[in-house]
Image 1 (cartoon, rainbow, N blue to C red):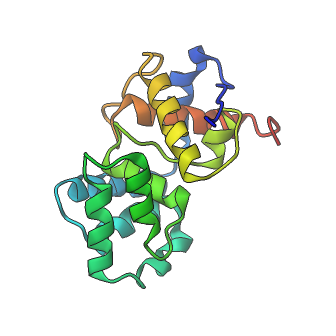
Image 2 (cartoon, rainbow, N blue to C red):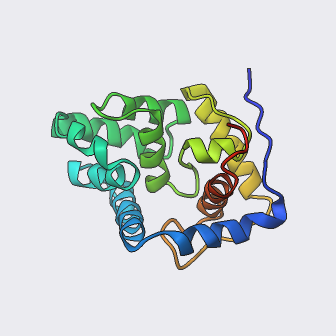
Length: 188
């Protein structure tokens, strides 16, 4: 069964919402996001290290970082090598990351989004809410990524070239997150 997504914001709002998201982010949030995408680029180049995955996890959930230390360097290398392979399916990439202690589906999606910002997006309750949904599993994430890629490719948002993750997909993610943030009573 394929998940159904329904964009809650109007298409006309999306670019403004993505810009508003970045303007409202604090200096620490901006720094963590920049470091996460730099770490993702390093992973893409084959630097499968704890430090790189830690920078990404810190961006999305500081409280999870201490769990990563329980993973051996070899386990991290193996998981990241599958996740960073352009030939891995969404299922293969996510499943490899889920073998790491401290990595759940939301964190796995953040790692993938930092490695391949043109291909993956972060699975977050706010972005899901902005698409009228709230279920989390690997098949759901694959549907979510496909939906977001499709919507980002419509041209309703433009890449924010001067920001981390300078892709239309990441701009779309920011817009969804901001829509949910500014519509707190919707869907809950």
